[in-house]
Image (cartoon, rainbow, N blue to C red; front, side):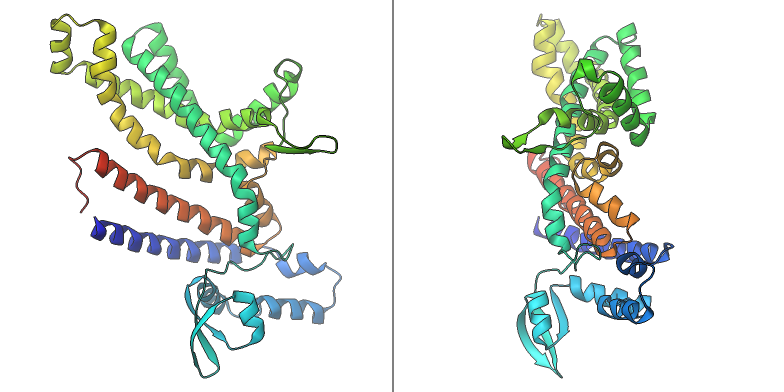
Length: 351
């Protein structure tokens, strides 16, 4: 078990390094000048040069990448200055040639636009993305399993064909197209009947009542984000249900005179849901990553919304910080799912 966790941790670290390198070079290949966007087009050359030097943008790209890895690394090297001590908040191990060898938490730098710490920006917006992803997962899982079971029990009927057709459409439809259609129909044309808004936040501040929870603003983004996993769960549950119902022990249970409900509830359902639960358990991270365009279209306050705006403004630290945070969630969730699956199913061995 410990060997498996160490190996996955090592591979996860390699994934983070790869993500950092790829996103770093892609971002620097984008057209535009972040310094000009920060300082304004009419700013004099000396001011722009001062900003570039302060942000380290006057160095070659490879050197900038090494500096960024040094900021991310818990064990890093920094000049022994009071400014760096305040900036990184590190614990010094030793000093070598006026350079501190330090232990610190990963430093994601500050936003080019707001000068706010990227870690603080992520913490402020993670709640919205988490609840959107979680509610979408609950919606897709609960409804998808019920529809899949219903389709499996009514194989080749018009109900089965309708549900399969729906699942194919759900898988094929791009999320941003579904988001636009959902917002247009249910948030605009049918707003008088649904009472839903095209855009909105989970928490709304009112001058009279103060901060209030507005769950209705969560409905349209949740349904839109959960549409594709819902379609996949329907097909997965249906296939698993049909496979289990064809097994010998199901026929034996029926031959013993058990009712159809007892056969399904006590024998078929438990085994049919095993692969579904395994697939669903690792989707929370995927939904958090897939919420980017959904948040942007519905103006939902989350990491996706912040990241897209950061790309528009060439705010490199925010883009890198949010990308690495989502990648870290992927790695952690996948590791946790593998461990839990091995604990639940004794047939699985972690090598």
